Image (tube, rainbow, N blue to C red; front, side):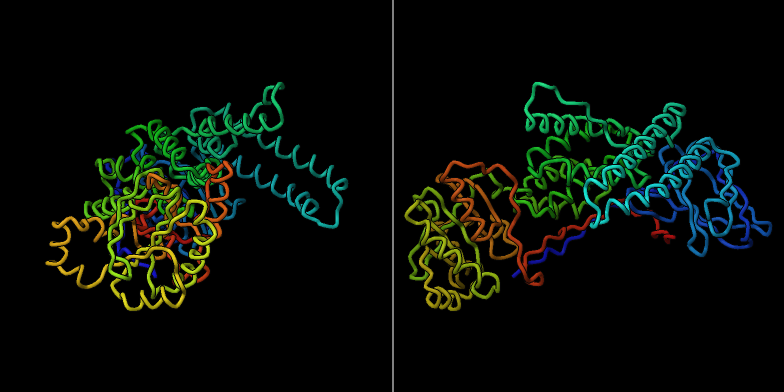
Length: 523
């Protein structure tokens, strides 16, 4: 059973230009007149309408230029959704084009950036044509590796030619925005590792060099770069593929990146904060919620994200508060509730090497499947130091007791009921020292937004693992007992029936960009 938090964080930004540019974007359109023409801007990997103008009776058009902070890659879009990209910087741009927006019909008459850009586009298009037949051979399963070898060399030579062209273009035009955009999409070159290292050590050396120099080709202080698809691709690759999915490592890296972005690049700061926050929240990697709590505490709660409305920040802080008490490495709060016989039990009284906390419901479809499996796990490991502390999450105690009896559940199980949760009764129980408020409201301190919720605790009730299935827990216990490596990231248990499974979607669903205008149609 899942519990939806009806929260929505929308990144709202003052995306309207604060200053007018003295430059213009103009030209002539062959085949269009007396109709609208649109200017759209990239923002990360999305495209948005930005401005509208009129093509006059002679086919001429003109847009006002953009101030420095709003420069970047834009698209000119016709009423029929044909479009082509341009690089907008602080210069006059004069481009003639045909109604189909075909590359052969695009004539850059004025603009250093776009003259270089379209020379580059035409060069890349030619190389793509040359690459196609080589890729066909390399993908041919009927070809032997020996037969493919000369084609691999051709592919390498082709790639080397492109890199050489890119470097020469950047070297000749170091001050142009287009050079920064092209450089941003280039891979970091990794030098040969020291010869005295073993093969495994060389691989590690190369990886750490690559990670340390990953951002060398990106000017993180430049606010214009966010208006290019490559910005999103580079950031996403860094977060999801380059970094190990370990919260402590990712927290260290996001701190480092944001310190380099600086205060002048507001959009870059915003985009990076969001992407990391989003990844921390929706990642299906165990213990990743530590990163979400860090981002909320250090950026949203400290007033560093003014684009998010106050009520949404309040929601995020509340969500973080539910997670912070049960993060990996933290000692989880105690739960004191009565078992099925009315005997009060305390989780902290379980003197075990490992305690498995299972928060579940007798009416939950996945709980019905998983709890008996956890009972088998308990029987397998109880003589090796495992205790299980089951906590029923709703007040339907009759169904809870019946399930325990019918399935012969052996491990300790406790539950609240209507009497306990009555205000007068609860007050007497708390003030009488029988239980406490945290126990009665355990769902708030153990992040129970869905069931079953499973935590593995050590002898001091510190969280070792969470959100794992019975088979994963069995494997983890074997590793712990044998002294094996348990530092590798572990995927959270995934449920087969997505309709009933705990949601892995963002509870806040913040956009990846401010909301300037409607998305532009794509070609």
